[in-house]
Length: 448
Length: 158
Image (cartoon, rainbow over all chains, first blue to last red; front, top):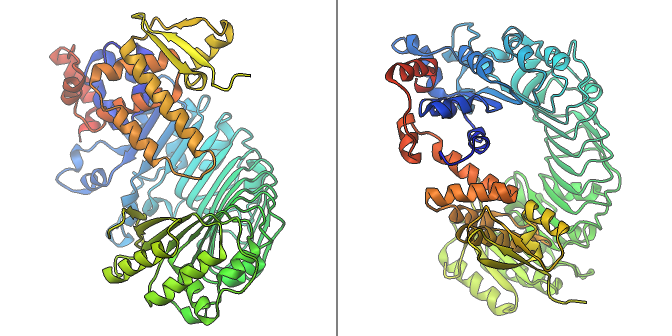
């Protein structure tokens, strides 16, 4: 370490994602101590253990107040371009019943607190992230956006979590390119203020943002957007002429309007969409679709001739399975040029039921399809096998088949599946694996 | 018209010659700039990098160039490449330091990121004494100085 020139040592120290580690380095040697002050970021997280110690009568006298630690770090740093202050995710699980005081020692989006340190660093600050403590912040409306927008002229990335934000006094922040609001109560019903004050946004993440009525995202430079809406019938609109990547998760929007002609990567999760209006998506190449009403969503989708990679799954598929109407023909009709298809367990189950009711219709085969990844749910191994055979017959260019079984399936079903498939089409490259709710798919080599 | 890719000749500080295809050599911004300045048949001298380290660096560059070409038409994850990278940096500290210096001199951002992050990961979670032991750092504080620095940073030990 001592052979390394100081700038490289500072580079390494800058990659420590926690200022606690940086502080410990200071004690290792004088040179590490002095170089540590060259690091241009402060990252301070209040862990669950610190929180508990600060409340427990035996230990609380020995715990430095969190805000004091932070203030000290900011004042000691020579120059800061990135600040992260927050409470650990585990503190989100603390229930209101366990807290009976009105303390604000962890109320991080408090204007009074932010005023103590932000003016010192705002000139050079490029990234700011505040992850507040919901218990102390949810009932206090914060004017912090007004302060941030008036003094952080060169801020490029802003992330605010677990707070109630007022938009009074919000000034335009023309250099901001990335904005993330997570679990925020925002007083901007239609997102008008957001659109006006952050016109240069390229990345916008709205996750669990409440207080919206008929929100409309209208941003000319937006390239990537993630929007998770947890409550029910809002009308959602996105007008973004340069948007390339969209992840949209909602439940039952009253209407869903998309004007995003350049979209190429779209992940949509929607239980039920009554009024889904999207203009042509001529550039869409990668589509992931999850819905409890796959059949009707597909009906509303504009024809997707450009889509090459497609992932489809059904939400809540164990409910009323027999009434579902999703079938593979509909998929092939709307998306004729897919090269790689991934079917989740719900989509597979629905498609298999449809197959059982009547063979895969004799429509034009999916000539472009070369790869299928399917998460199987086996009710009757013979039916599953004949469904797979008919897909193989239909899609004559299939070269890669990856099938995943649930650990619940018995090994005899698994071996008949493997032997049946490999015998039917030995030239196809077969891969086998295991899928489980909530876990990543795992692959196994043959011989389950 | 040549059908074989263009080869670049590099010479380490200890005078060993390495021949690599242009794409691999161009992973280094430094070499890329040098290629544009010299005529194509000249040997490019790299006086700051020994043969032992240069061999490793070129191994890294080749792996990454090959991986990028293979991934062009697919949407594959980088899990395999990340695993390879993790193995690549399982070396003794001196080699790791040499790789950092070489990546810095040759201006190979991804290698610099990988090696610096590896060292940062070695620091994470350690006490000051453990940090000193891991990196063979001499404690140059007097007891009084150490006490004062400790008091200033007491919160990190709570």
